[in-house]
Length: 267
Image (cartoon, rainbow, N blue to C red; front, side):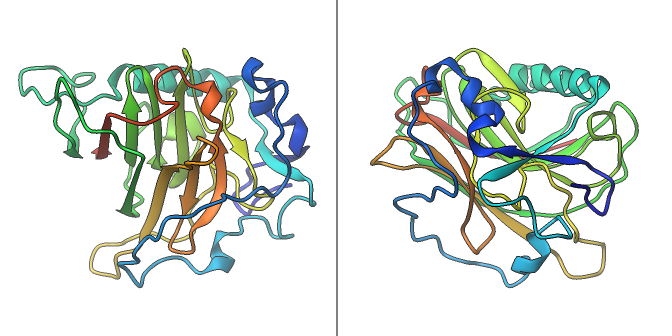
């Protein structure tokens, strides 16, 4: 399938998606169109959320039932995604120390985060409304807004990004970044994230964004741990749409709770 922007997705059988190549998921009992057993009561705070019809990025409505959309990538795409994933993994914990270098020179952050502590609280979810923008970004630069939950080396990040080097365009893409059990990747480039929607991939292009002097558009992301299964679910928009989940057994330190959460803007 091809989107209006030229991105090509293959409709892959639910059981053949990359997540299930993870050695910890060989004997899984997941199934197509799974839904969370429990969705938290999340208060809506904006009227500028997307209409459901605008979330469907495929003109024909998406993949057939029992399949999920996986973006087709060139070797160059894979290489650039691996590079940025490695860089993000090294800097996904934002230090509370003003004297510590947070990332490469020239990287700027706007941060709301929990404080570092020898005995931090346990966090079972993180969510935020992120303003959607489409800033002009040069090659080898990027701009992003995201939420993070972390415990030790494991972390989950969700948000939007403009990254011409990785995506080969200047559009505003949704993204997820997974760092679990020693492996890390964007979107579906490595093992672990299970897609349950046949019509909304985790790396699609937003159709609307804020322009100066006009209405400010926002989108809500929410990651939370389901108590009954231990899986971490990703909900999207005020409609609380489940896009997919991270099975608890792919993690080494984030399998029960997080110890750090943040909302970060990066450029």
